[in-house]
Length: 230
Image 1 (cartoon, rainbow, N blue to C red):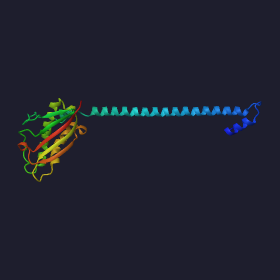
Image 2 (image 1 turned 180 degrees about the vertical axis):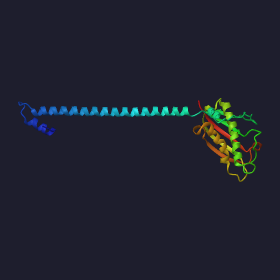
Image 3 (image 1 turned 90 degrees about the horizontal axis):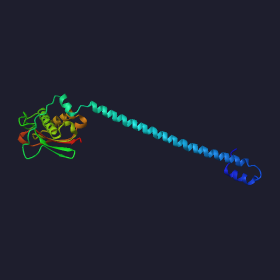
């Protein structure tokens, strides 16, 4: 028997107090059942929410562990910069002294700023691109400049493996008036950085500009900023 609150009030008024109130007993039992059912539902909701939260937490933990393991595996499979030099049979040249009143590199915090570098004094290509030199010759010159700068970075840091990122490169090309392929020339430098450090570390922001002239009639000069790993 289902009794609502209005019926309960009516029954309680009309039923004599001397008679057993079956209706009251039913109401009491029904109310208790309602309270128990409500409590059970609340407990079920709490347990359900707890299980969902636990499941989400486990999934998140599993994802983090998978990413960490995958990153470690990738790191183990990627050779270091020093190892790449050996694999590519690249020998870095001697570091020439500064030719004027400056230093080769200045470190500020975790950034290493390298002064502008030209090829060695006895480098075979000199002159203007678009007049005296071809793009492939300029490319080779830019690569040679890159080798010298790698040697300077190693001297400053002790190892190329301490380079966290090649950040910014400024490439200057001694150019004839109508020459416009400076980016192709400076690719000689940029390609070397990617070969040695890999794309994640070696690929950088860059400017490649034409100049009316460079010191000692060199074809290429390059500046670079690198981030140093702590």
